[in-house]
Image (cartoon, rainbow, N blue to C red; front, side):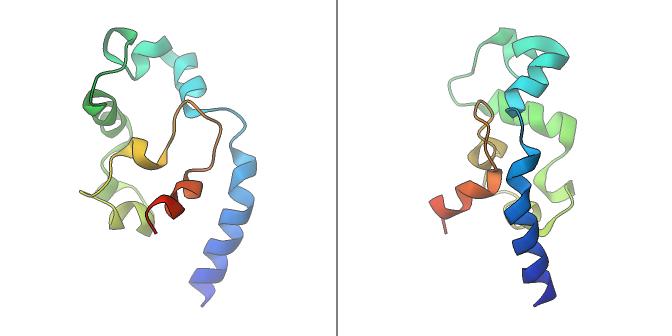
Length: 96
């Protein structure tokens, strides 16, 4: 019960933490090449997903039950729409 309550509170306030897109924050570090080979998106986004894993670790190594439950099932870009300012939790309804 407390776990559900805590998650509900976190989700209700988490949108305020996303003032700019993930792409904007990563572009500030190294331009488009921070995520894309030669600055261009790959056809299947596999390179970009691997780039996320190289920096942040795989879903199995990231704290939080939600990441670990989706290990081997989803790629990072499924929930983290990087070129939009959004809360990744908003994409849960697409599958659940």
